[in-house]
Image (tube, helix red, strand yellow):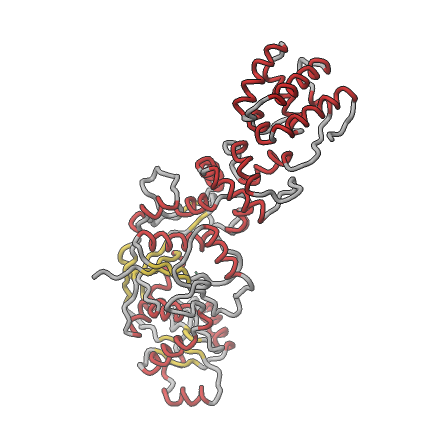
Length: 495
Ligand code: GLU
C-alpha cells in the first residue's frame, strides 16, 4: 500500500507575503495535487519577536487569490487541529520531556551575557567552531531538574553528535552529508517556553503525518539538525526537497530594492493570479526548457520534483509582464471580466466615477482584450463609458485635411445613419460608415478619427466600431449630436 502524499506549507507570520515563500507554497500545492494528496497549511508563529500583526491573514489571502485552496489548516480546520504552532505547545513539551529523559537533550542555564562573551571570544580566536561550547551538557539530571523547578531560567538544547557525519537524501540534490562538528547543541525550547523552529517543525511534521517537506534551499543547512532530532525521537523522517534560490537579474538575492516582491503588490499592479502562478512555478521547475505558458491544471498535470533544478532561478520582471499579456489574451471574456471587476473593486481606478458592475465589465472586454498587458491599463480606455460628460477641444474633432464644414457633414451623416440602424452592433456600424465615407468623399480614417473624439473624448481609444456598440445606440448618437452642436455653435462642453 502506498502512503497518501501529505505536504505542508509552513509560513511564519513575518512581513508581507514574499514571492519566495509563495513559490514554496505553489510547489507544495502542485506536488500535493499532482499526487492526489493533501495540502496542509501550518502557521509557524512561535517566534514572538518576529511576529507581525496581520501577516498570517495576508499570506492566506494571497494563497486564496492564487487559487491555492488547502485541505487542512487555518479557516478550514482538519484532523490535526490546531494549525497554529502557538496553540500546540503541549506537543513540544512532550517531545522535550522524552528527549530529556532519553538523555538526548539537556537544560542550559548559561546567561545571555556568557553566550555573547563566548561568541566574541571565538570570533577573536578565529575558532573553527562558533557556537555553544557545551558547558551545561554534563550538569547532573537531578540537579538540572531542581534548578529549573526552583525557577532558574533555562533553555533546552539538543545534544548533537560531536563528530561523524549526518547523511540524508534530498530529492533534488541526491545524497547530502554534513559534518556534525560544525553544528553546536542548538536550542529547542527557549526560556519563554516557546519552541524554536527546529523542534516545532519536526514535531509537527511528525504528528501531522507529513510525507514530503518541500522548502527553500535556505533550510538545507538545518537538515542535519532535523535528521538527528527525528532519530533521537525514534520517528521516521519525511522526504525532503530543497528548492533553488530566487535571484534578481543582477544575480543577488531578490529583495525589495529590485522592485515588487509581495504577492499583493503584483496583484495591485494588475498581474492575473494565473500569470503569477505560472511565472512562479517556472522559478526552479520546467517541463521541457521551452514551454512557458501553463494553465493551473496543466501545471498540476505535469509537476514533478524530478523536473526541479538545482541552479538558482532568476526573477525576470519583463518576462512576468509578457506572460501577463499572454494570459490576458488567453482568458475567456468571462474570466477577464471577473478579473477586472475584482481589480476595480480592490483598487478603484481614479478614472472611474463609480465602481462598475459585471455587466459593464463584460461589455468592455471586447474593447480591451487584445490591447492590455495588465489590468489597470483597461480603465483609462473605457472610463468615458461611465462618465456623464466627456471633454475635448473642438479642434480635435477636425481631422487633418478637413475643415469645420466637412467635419459637420461627417457628424451629420453619421448621426442620421447610426440612429436608423436596426441592429446596433460593430458589423452593422462598420457596414454603414465605410461606404458613407466614400459618399462624402473623405477617407475612412478621417471619419473614424472624428467619431472617436466625439464619442470618447480620446485620440486613442479601443476600436471605434466596437466602442460605439459598447456605448449603445442612444448614447452614441447623442454624443455625435453634441459634437455637431459644439462645432456649429462654438460651445465647449459636452452635455
Ligand atoms: N517557517 C519556515 C519558513 O517560514 C518554514 C520552513 C520549512 O518549511 O521547514 O520558511
